[in-house]
Picture 1 (cartoon, rainbow over the protein chains, first blue to last red):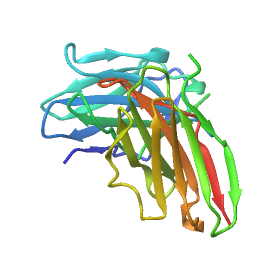
Picture 2 (cartoon, one colour):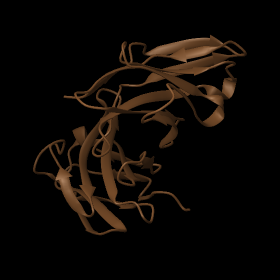
Picture 3 (cartoon, chains in turn green, blue):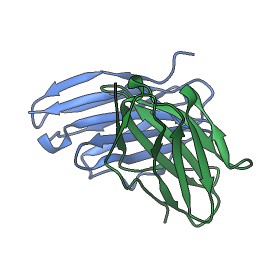
Length: 113
Length: 112
């Protein structure tokens, strides 16, 4: 069975500092990995995905994520955080090209000025 | 593109009433998903369709919940009778076969 773990409920970062939001996954086949962001009272917005190829994936709003097969991780990163990045971030995995996405429980990112 | 459209955005009802949530997926997408989000349980898949056919409904809580997709451009999630524990935000999402999901803005349901 596939699963996703986001070990941190909350991440606090100062504006301008780099940020990392952690995610580990478990699938039996080839992982399709995704990051989404959710602002208050809004739906989830797609940030980036990894299917195959380069382990470093670049996405929207300056975010990137690094796929690490040996550690089964897909951490979200940004070199310089903005206050407007404060939101709830979800990692998701799908086993193969089709089917449901399994979401982590989410990590609240708080960026302070 | 208009994105995934959900209605109503907010619904307040009394226990025992029927609730119908509606979703219009993005044109050309052939997979549709219904999720429920609560503080306690996070984001849970209720059911998903491929080409209008239900593929996995194992997340539907009980017989009070039902979902239909009569055509490629419309889906409903019905709760009958509703209970206070059904209070949550219900999201509809759509995707192409191997693509990322695009979410609607959600329907916030409060059952008194």
